[in-house]
Length: 260
Length: 262
Ligand SMILES: Nc1ncnc2c1ncn2[C@@H]1O[C@H](COP(=O)(O)OP(=O)(O)OP(=O)(O)O)[C@@H](O)[C@H]1O
Ligand SMILES: [Mg+2]
Image (cartoon, rainbow over all chains, first blue to last red; front, side, top):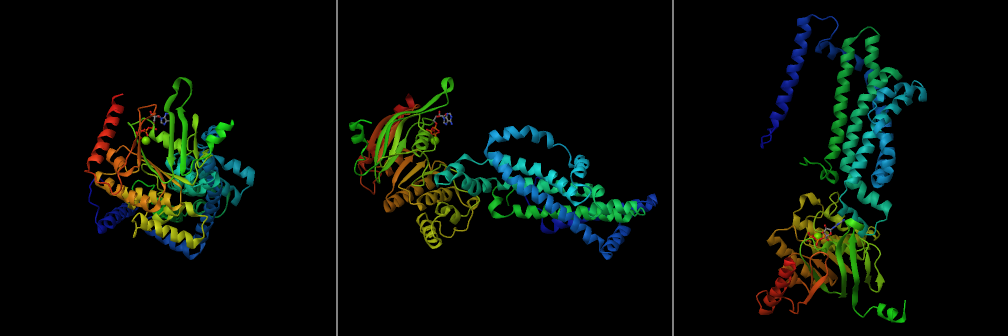
């Protein structure tokens, strides 16, 4: 949008609602017109969600998926941020590990599934490991670039007030790099949410990914498949929204271009 | 060290800062750039010294070496008879711009160097310097919500809060508009008169130098050497249309003019 006037409040709700409704309508009538027996209509998906909620499987699956993401991404944050800060602070060390990182980074965590199963067997740990892998690299990369773009003036100022290197890391470098680190975390969570669904289809028997594959396998319940897909989309959106709301915090907001 | 040198090394009474044959060369061999050369200067306690010189002559380099951020390639910096080997909270450098911590509020910035103080004392110190640089009402504001002039005042307050003996200011008002600069000049003078610190002040602005300084150091173009030292023997408050003021200002302009010609 290139207009300087902000859209009015009602407009910013109205048009998206219209678009969503139009899409639902298109979906609904496409199902009717093509007379498909396999693909569910929006109404049967809605019934599917109600059924899942009623049987209490949906909540359990959502919790399982979220728990795996929390553990895998949490571990990636706990390991990745200090490592990223260190590598950003010591470019010589970064040069040593960078080639390895550059090779590992483009490998989809999905490709690691067989390896994860060898390491951890079929089960939670394999899935958490895959999420860890998917989250780890974006966080480390964001940290390294965040640290290396800290303005030298701020480092000098920190030094001037007598900070030792460890204190400089916690009191200047980390807060200065935090906006970029948050961008990395948001990216990592997005990837984690993609990975958990794929990993759950293969390595475990709970979670939203399992729900999708199980609904298909046990009786071709495509209404439940689409219902689970919708839930995956909504929760992914909510996760993104959560991180974005952290980015609005005043102590990091300065680092974002569209600060408002 | 010979006996004569030991005697020489004794600090004079009231002398604060001593630069001896100070030189700084950037880089190595073919690509080396001499930024400052053979700078000799004595600054006494509580003195306000302005440093002027052509753009790119090495003024920032000089301050950074004196403040201990850059190692000197020759000569020495001595403060209170003690050689300077690195940055020290007893002397704070104020940067031209973007020197405040954007993730901290005004209070957080001023209190940055005070983490070792007891809580109550820290709070009082912060309140005092918020007052001193007239940022009342903005204690909880973030730098992104402050004007350029307010950010520079904040940087000065953060520096003063740790009670430094010496303040190094590297064109602190250089990025501000004319009117703000004049106001800030007055504020700095007021603070200097009440707090009595030694100040080394780099500036491009001749009027700023003649209005504030006890002495003005004129540097030559790169590599910077001391070209002239002007003592501004006008008592405060200075009348900026007095003959003596205009005379000194002309003298300084002449010096700078020469400097630009070289
Ligand atoms: N890190 C560096 N490496 C090599 N050369 C440098 C470096 N920093 C500065 N210089 C050079 O040293 C000279 C002096 O720079 P300095 O920043 O001290 O000048 P200045 O007088 O502060 O300039 P200005 O008035 O523009 O602030 C310049 O020619 C600059 O190119
Ligand atoms: Mg400079």
